[in-house]
Image (tube, rainbow, N blue to C red; front, side):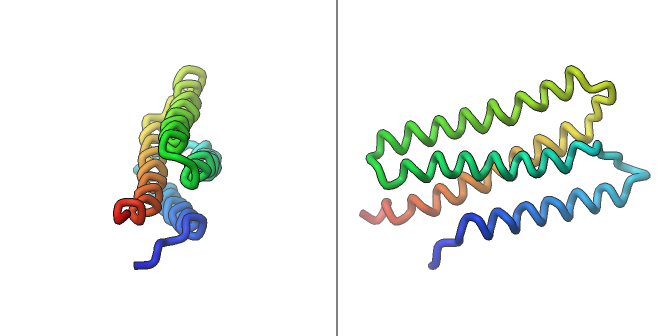
Length: 128
């Protein structure tokens, strides 16, 4: 089986997420989303690219370097994802629960996406 390419798949995931956001915004009479959803989508896209670069740079090196970079990327992703949400919940006058839920779902989808590509890259090493 051919390994999928990271960046085209990331663009597809971001497009699908954008379509879901547009469909929720179209149903605006039932669900109202903050205007911060679009910058959050771009933020998660860029955060995924950055953490993928950190993790992927450890693949050709030894296992200790790879594990250190993987855990570092997980920590960076978590801190850089939760910190903006806390700032929003503390300082925003609206404090929309729908935005917090969509934000956490984006975190979940982008994290699962990156872990999937990490596992796909490691499968050839399991055969050795």
